[in-house]
Image (cartoon, rainbow, N blue to C red; front, top):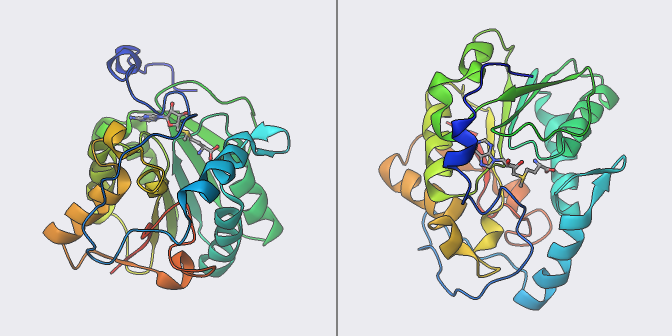
Length: 246
Ligand SMILES: C[S@@+](CC[C@H](N)C(=O)[O-])C[C@H]1O[C@@H](n2cnc3c(N)ncnc32)[C@H](O)[C@@H]1O
């Protein structure tokens, strides 16, 4: 646990919609322009309503793990393929997904350092393989993660699953743009909120962040369509969100 973390950061973010995971679907028909490609998933709203309920209630080893089953399957393939020596998850919640990544790495025989980052001390699991760092995703430059990364073995797998606001998502894309090496992955989670009609709560959310970042820096990342489209076009909670560093 990080002792010196400035508690005022938590207060600053009190209106962040993801301090409590999203429970209700909203009605907003905004869609991000189709660049670098269409962000729409192949799921319709009715399907998403029930699917989302399941995702929000899903548990891994009795700990909440807010992942869609399709994305759990995609992470299994991805981690087996890239064999990351470091996995950084931004947005811990109860720590269920971090535990899932640590178990996957073990199962595949990969020696992987797993770090999970949150601005709240919300982990309900304490597994010696998972390190928890308290930090604000909006300001990683000044965080303990920034220091820790200096000794983290490559290749890295970065997972942004924290605020889902445009500002935070864009900041994370920017922060890792000069730290990742060619072929390393950054997963931008939960752009599906757009198809659920919730984008306005997030200032445009992950999709807008990917869109704007690709417009400003077209050569930094590309989308791994073999993952986003494995089960159908953007059949994932992370549309266009499986990003690879160029
Ligand atoms: C969607 S939950 C994470 C879910 C978790 N990865 C899982 O799959 O079970 C989002 C988490 O991000 C944290 N969070 C929100 N904004 C943040 C920020 N600016 N910096 C760090 N953590 C943040 C929240 O406290 C919350 O625990």
